[in-house]
Length: 468
Ligand code: FAD
Ligand code: NAI
Image (cartoon, rainbow, N blue to C red; front, side, top):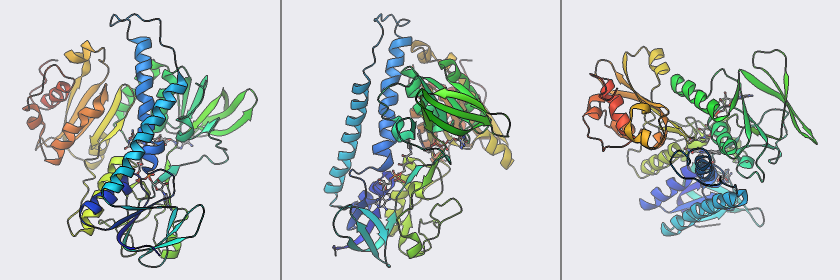
C-alpha cells in the first residue's frame, strides 16, 4: 500500500500532467499513474510535438527548394537527410518528456508506472508490466487517459506500410505515393510533411469537403492551396479495402454514396479518420462510471463523473480533442478540488492546422451563426494587400472576422495564411474580454507585420479596411 494522496491522476498527457502540477501548486499531495515509459501522453510522445518538429523541418526543406531562388539565395538544391530529420524529432520529444519529469520532481508529485484502474471508492490499482499490483489510497481521482487512433474495419494497421499517425511520424523512407484516409487535421499535417519531402499524396475523404467543422470558405481556399502544392483530393469517397502486395498496396476506393470502386496503387496508407477515447482496462464498469454513446466518459459541468470523487478531462471526455483544451480542463479540475470556481470557456478554444499556409479558427463559424439565426457582419482582409506578406512571399490567404451585427462584439475569426496560428490569439484574448471589432480596429498594430491584416479585417467590419 502506498501513501494516501489528496489526488491521483491516471494519465500524464497535457490534461493529466497540467492538472497534477496545478493541484500540487495549490498544496495537494498528488500522485500520477502512467503506463508508458515516458510522461507527456500522446501530445509530447506521438502527437503535437513530434509532428510540429517534422512540419518545421519539412517546411524549411520545401522553402529551400521552391523559395530561396526568388529571394536571391542560390543553392544547389537541398539534399534530404531523413535519418537526421527523424533524429531531430526524437530529440525534441526527449527534451519535452524529460521536462515533465522535472516538473513532477519540482512539484513533489509521486509517479507510478503501470496501468491505472479504478478499484473501490478512493482506491486506484496500479498494475506494472512486471511486479506486484500496488493500491493507492486517494481522496479524488482524475481520469486523463486520452485517446487512440480510430481504425477502419477490416484494415490491418502494421505501422510500417499501413500506418496511423504514430507510424507516419517515423517512416524510414519517403513514400513514393502516400494515400491518406481522412482530410482532417492529421491527414493534412502529416500529408504535408511527406508531400514536401517528395511523396505524391492522395487524400481520400468521406465527406464532400476537407476539415469538417472549420469555416467552409477557409476550407475551400485551403484545399485549392494544397492542390497547388501537389495534393490530390478524392472527396465523397471511402476506402473499402487495402490489399498488401509485393509491389505495394492496392487500395480500393469507392464513392461514399455507393458506386464503382477504383484501385489505387501506393506504397503507404495513413489512416487518419479520427480518434477514440481510451478507457480500456480502466475499470469503469467495476466502478460504475458512465460513458456516452461514443465511449466518452460522461461528466457534469465540474468534470465529475456520476461517481463522487472521480473526475475526467481531456480527450477521454466530450469536446475538441486538443491539447490546450485538455490542459485548461486540468487546471479547472485542480481549482475545483481546491474549492475555487474552475471553469473552461468552450466558446474560445482556438484550433490551428500547422501546415503552410496555416489555418486558424476561434469562436463561431459563419455556418454556425447562420444556423443559430444570429445577424453578423463579416470583415475580411487578404494577405495580398499586406506589405510584410509581400516581402516574405507569403501572400496566400486571408483573415475573416465575424462580429455581432447589433453590438459589434466579435463572435469568431477564421484565417488561412502564413503564421496565422500565432495571430489567432489576439482574437481569443479579445473574445475573452467580450471585445468588439472596433476595439480591435482601434488597437495600434506594429508595422510591418502580418498581424496588421487582423486589424484591417476588424476595420472591414466597420467603415472599411484602409489598404484595400
Ligand atoms: P493523452 O495525451 O492521450 O494522454 C493520455 C495518457 O494516459 C497517455 O500517456 C497514456 O499512456 C495514459 N494512459 C491511458 N490509459 C492509462 C491507464 N489505464 N493507466 C495509466 N496510464 C494510462 N492537439 C493540439 O492541440 N495541437 C496539435 O498540434 C496536435 N497535434 C497532434 C498530432 C497528432 C499526430 C496527434 C495524434 C494528436 C495531436 N493533437 C494535437 C491532439 C492532442 O495530442 C490530444 O488532444 C492531447 O494529447 C490529449 O491530451 P490528454 O491528456 O487528454 O491525453
Ligand atoms: P479529424 O476528425 O480531424 O478528421 C478525420 C477525417 O476523416 C474527417 O474529415 C472525416 O470526415 C474523415 N473520415 C472519417 N471516416 C472516414 C472514412 N471511412 N473514409 C474517409 N474519410 C473518413 O481526425 P484526425 O485528423 O484523425 O485527428 C484526430 C484528432 O487529433 C482531431 O480531433 C484533432 O483535433 C487532433 N489533432 C489536432 C491537431 C492540431 O490541433 N493541429 C493536429 C493533429 C491532430
